[in-house]
Length: 71
Image (tube, rainbow, N blue to C red; front, side, top):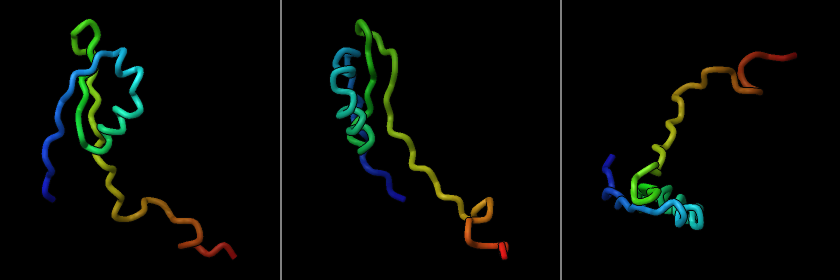
């Protein structure tokens, strides 16, 4: 699997993050950027995209309607 370009890292003051958090988090989710939230010019948190969850190869429990007969 080929990795795309690294997202840019942007420092965002906490007041701006509070006002625009939904659009900023959406940009992070889409891989456009990583955000470092600052308070009084100091980093306090980082917002990064979550790695996609991997699907299990085999279900760990019976799926309803399959397997045992309930007759």
